[in-house]
Image (cartoon, rainbow over all chains, first blue to last red; front, side):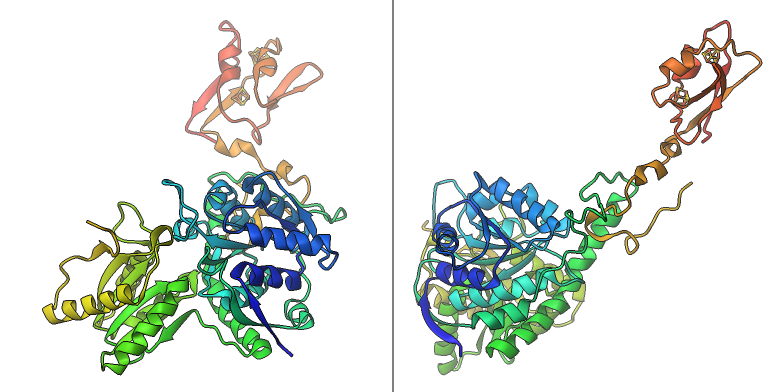
Length: 395
Length: 96
Ligand code: SF4
Ligand code: SF4
């Protein structure tokens, strides 16, 4: 029987890690991930988790340890946030191109300056091109479910890529929620054992990993990595379907809420999908055809599927908790724009990009209501006057 | 020239699964000028052998017998170091 629990997002991630049972866990504490790193350490100290916990001196080291452990044949995991992710940046593309199936929790937190410990998506969105799979989680339940699935995706023999699983700092990491947990045995059987393709510890079969490749071979290595990441989209769905069988909870590449016949849509990542859903319900009662698309898989980007889901809407707002300074728009906005360019569909919505919730600023019913109202005004006028705006910035 | 493999054929994750495979990597492929050694002119002073940065001057019984084109990168140091009165090595341009 599934267990009903009341846990914070950090607790839920720690609980998943206990059940996943990594051979190695190497983490450095950083707000708002600290509680998670502590809890895993507590499990190990209490003898209920048989994991080699390596208390490293920095995030650069935590990812280095994970790469080494993973290449030696261990299931390796870590967790970080914000500046911690920035500090391990150098190792992110290395992990991915070495095809080390490391799984990492990212508790989304704003980048400095000014110093801020609350939620923005600067960290993981900034790391979007590092070659990792990225999964986003609206709440503690999704963090728990995504984390277990992440290990299966990462370790799949046809994929072998690291996976980042993200949730909103404080809003989710520190808020207690009701969620359902699987039995330990079910998680164990679902994941099976990790079998490395080439283990560095196989002395009878020595291999060299991470050697130099000059211009004559570098391109082929990158192409191979790029293809694996693109291919992983199908595998992510396959794993989601298998997971639905053991958990009763279904996941897709993204969540479509009231989108099928919608005229006005919001695309959003992580926790603010909750408040958006509530506004959609309210507007639907008033006869406004509002809908929501919540991103779950951001890398690889499900471009064709998102175009299909949005093409018949009239106006769409991509709401994002980070800015791509000086860019055309924020990351998800530019990806969706490019996806429409690639798909060359006749039908496409008008699209605007609003930045919200920076550094943990609360986003409420009023803010989201205002967005849907703007979308209706744009539809009446038939044109966009301002395609990019900071939703909550005081003049 | 060695055959270059495609992206589907190389082991994943940058792995080199064969020990000592670097002996197969013939750096002479880079060469765009080829030193040619004239045995009749050569005095076997071995200056070229001392200066060659790639150990590509073949010496047997204290005699220069040829050049190892698998590793000679065509830098021309041997030709430059060969005494001006001897000039037993000439560089042929645009040749591997
Ligand atoms: S050209 Fe350079 S590498 Fe080749 S034999 Fe002469 S010195 Fe050695
Ligand atoms: S430097 Fe010239 S003369 Fe001396 S050994 Fe070499 S080729 Fe012969």
